[in-house]
Length: 151
Image 1 (cartoon, rainbow, N blue to C red):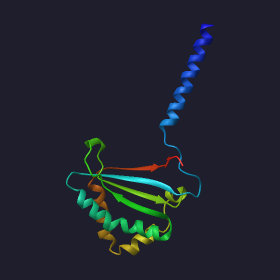
Image 2: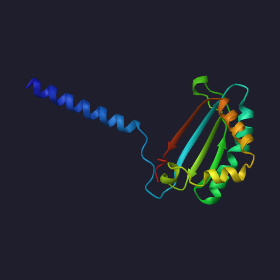
Image 3: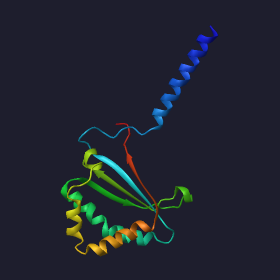
Image 4: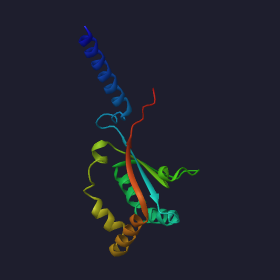
C-alpha cells in the first residue's frame, strides 16, 4: 500500500511540475496567416545611445518602412524607456514589428539586398555605418510576443 501511495504522489508531482512548466512558457503566436509580433531590444554602451539611434534611423528604419510598403510588415514602433532600471535589465530601445504572418517574420526577404542597394547606393558608407551600429551595442535580443488578453 505504501508503494502505491508513493507512486501516486510521484505521478501527481510530475503532472503538477509539467503543468507549471507549460504555464511559464509563452503561448504560441496566432494561427497561420495571422500577424506575428516581434520585439527587438537594443542595449548600447553608455554614452552611445544617441549615436545608435541616429544610425538606426538612417540605415535601418528606411528598410523597415520599405518592407512595410511592400506588405511584409504591418507596423513598426520604436520606443525607449521613460525611467532607468537595473543595469542587467536595462535596454535603451525597443523596436516592435508586426509582420504580415509568421512565415514572413521567420524567413529572409528575397528582395532585401536589392532594397538596400536602392536605398543606399554608397554601399561602402552603408556597410561601415551598419558595422558601427552593432559595435556600440552591448547586447541585442529578439522576443516574439503573443497577445493573451482575454476577449
